[in-house]
Length: 68
Ligand code: SF4
Image (cartoon, rainbow, N blue to C red; front, side, top):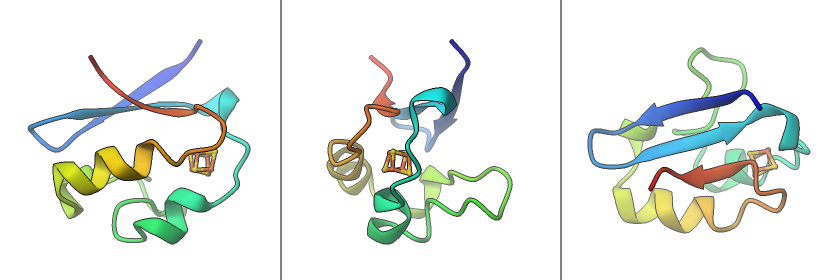
């Protein structure tokens, strides 16, 4: 499975493209981090680690996770 990694230096967000149902919840919750029109589309440095963890837990498909 193709997994992409995005780090803010403290934690790393994992994103599995084929699991994403494009609900847009991540984009609505943290628009400065998630922007599908830009590359990279996830910029974790634009939010606190706590905000990122909270947001990842709200992804309905399991496409987003935190690297352990
Ligand atoms: S919240 Fe999860 S499923 Fe929805 S667009 Fe973001 S990554 Fe994809």
